[in-house]
Amino acid sequence: MVSMGIVIILVAAAGPAISDWVLKNRVDAEVASLRSALAYARSEALSRNMWVTIRENGARDSSAPKPMWNGGWQLFTDQDNDGFLLETAGEEMLRARVTNIEDLSIEWAKDITRLSYGPRGVTSGGSQNTIRYCVADDTDHAFAKGISINAIGRTRIVRGADVGCTP
Image (cartoon, rainbow, N blue to C red):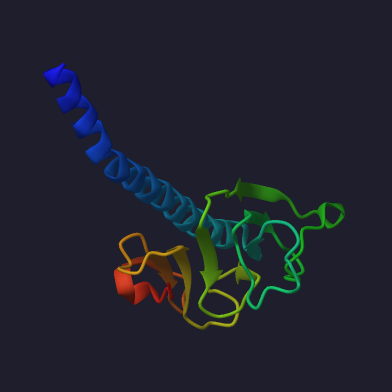
């Protein structure tokens, strides 16, 4: 009975830690997936000598104050650089990802619905931006993570309060 009681206490104490660990790993996987896709988009734009676009997956809720990437993303060749996949125009889907993590908001620091890499590997607009992965009620920013993209399209990981999440 005593050993059974000890096991129950240990499991009860480890429960929140395990769920935090699972959530952290899911956020890390989403960040790694998008960062890999951005590097792939840049590489494909250079090697194919054409525009490659990554955009939010599916339709956006027009009442949302900012574009939210919670549904995932699509990566495709974009010959006319209009931000839309037109397979009839010879454009092709290269990768796609569906994201579904409860209590996670994924948004760009600047309101964009797409990011395009040109034939020289430079992003459209040429300005720096950050995509933020913020977990609801994460007041100490333990789960906050972001990908910062510089003007020439290179990425780096940002963590904690530097991400800019607002709890």
